[in-house]
Structures are given as C-alpha cells and as structure tokens.
Image (cartoon, rainbow, N blue to C red; front, side, top):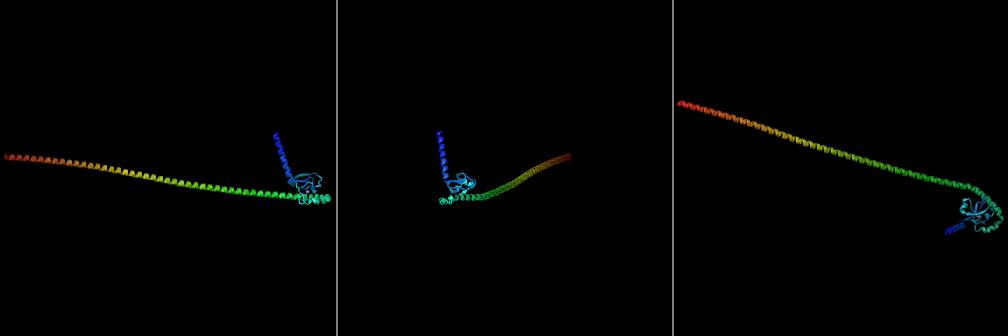
Length: 260
Ligand SMILES: [Zn+2]
C-alpha cells in the first residue's frame, strides 16, 4: 500500500514537471480585463502594465482560442523592447489608453470578419462534404447499375443457355422419338414380312398338300380304272376261253356225230 502511494506521488511529480517544462516554452500571459486582446511573452511586458485586472498565465493555444493575438511588443520587438522600455515609461499611461482603444476597435471589427471566415469555411466544408456525398452516391448508383446490368446479362445468358439446352433436349427427344418410331416401323415391317413369308409358306404347304392329295386321288382313280380294265379284260378273256371251249366242244360233238 505504501509502495503504491509512493508510486502515485512519483507519477504526480512527473506530470507536474512535464507541465512545468511545457509552460516554460508555451506559457504566455494575459490580462483578464474586459478589453484585453493580446497575450504576452513575459508578465513584465509594458503592454500589461496598464492591466487593472489580474495577469494570468495560459498557453498560446488557449489564448488564441479566446481571441487573443500576440503582443507585437513582446514578439516582434522582443530584443529592442528592453531598451525602449525606459523611454516609453513616461508616456505609458497615454499609450496604454491608445492601445486599448485601438484593440477595442480591432476587436469589434475583427470579430464579424472572423465569424464570416469561419462561416465561409464551414460552408465550404459542407459543400465539399456534399460533393463527396454526391460523388459517392453517383459512384454507388453506377456500381449498382453495373451490378444490375451484370445480373441482367447473367440472367439472359442463363436463360439463353436454358433455352438452348431445352431446344437441344427437345431436338434430342424428337430424334429419339423418330428413331424409336423408325425402329418400331422396321420391326413391324419385319414382322409383316415374316408373317407374309410364313403365310406364303403355309399357302405353299397347303397347295403342296392339295397337289399331293389330288395326285393321290388321281393315282387312286387311275389304279381303279386299271383294275377295272384288268377285270374287264379278264372277263373278256374268260368269255373268249369259254366260247372257245364251247366251240371246241361243239366241233368235237360234230366230229363225233359225223364219225357216227
Ligand atoms: Zn507584451
């Protein structure tokens, strides 16, 4: 605990020394009076001798922020000042009054001008910002357009590809269907041909059969006729033989009778 406390003390001392060193190079002095418009390099500047209020130390930045300007006596004539200081001593009062008057005038005059400048600056900045915003918006719009165009082009390409694909598919399907039909027709033709051939064969067979049958019938008829013929012949022969026998017998009888 004690160590921590000591550390704090050390840190505080360091900060204090840092501030002090900064003050040594950047510290200026101003009069807290109502009409004071200058900051001074030293608190012994003649410009501060007429100050009826407090003289306080501050930084250049803070003084400037409060509308103070550097004292020409301290800065421009820093080296010459001490020498002139003595001479001016007597007229100090008069000069301070004059300076006060002038600064008051300048302050009154300067304020609107500064305000105007600030306003102009703000306006310019705003205009620049607007321009940047407009430019950005235009760029964004352009990018959006480009992106949209890209998307549209892509979609069109996809559509085209799809259409092409579909057309190709249709064509393929048509081809396949045609081929199928052709194959089917060929098969049907084949079947028809086969059937026709079979029919023809069957017809031939039937015709052959008929022919064979007819031939057989004819043969049978011929045989019968031949048999009949043979029978008739035999009968005729038999008859002839019988007649001859009868004739023989008759002749014999006659011969016998004659002999008797
Ligand atoms: Zn001064």
